[in-house]
Length: 282
Image 1 (spheres, rainbow, N blue to C red):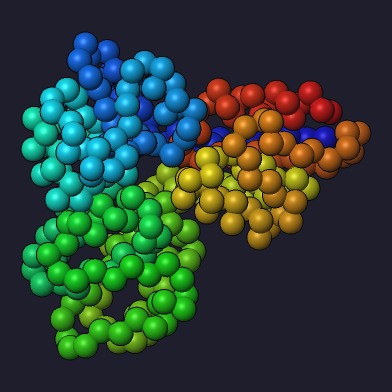
Image 2: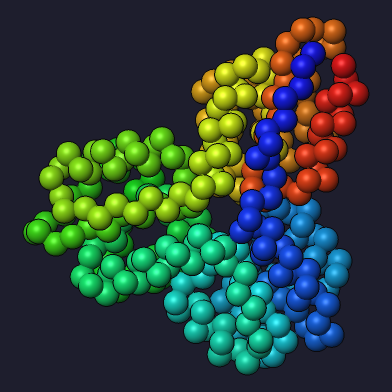
């Protein structure tokens, strides 16, 4: 049995930066919070909790904070949430992914100039909700082909289209093609980050060769779910796991290929544990 692990598996630049910021903030002698889980990985959130870092999970909880340190999550926050954070009197440490901050600036500038904003992504994801909060004009979120085909825009005003950083790159192109065919005046800004492009492409390549494909990621992680979706198309036996305890491996002794990849919020330790348990089976 051959095991192939994606070189791009695990923490991306933005996640690594956010996690490092959170651990550095944890050294502060006063109360330390993150506004929402710092990343979509419960093991990291739990480890920070052991170091005294509490997660603020709602605006109601935020209203009870007076002072201390608040670290913004890697997914970013809306303009209104940013103002609310400042109103607490806490020291605000911005751990927003730089690629997400770029989208905030684009949406802010384009909408201020009158463009209608379209976001290709998951409307329930915190990154998308944060991006929506930087627009001065109405925002439409498109997550499916059906929604792309149903989208309408009256007048000759410009449409600025951006993407959630972890959206499926192929689907984004499909949706953009649909909108262009409608004849709209579109400014398309492909904001899917380079790490996502690389991770998805490598996962697809490995899955085409694999008899069993393993995608490691938290159940709340959007980019991990996209990896599973991509791999499942190429390899019917694709598993979406959070740790080695979820593994369902085929009987040992075969000559097949096991592929392993992981989402952007998965620590190297978890990837290594999965590799060790896969090797132990063969």
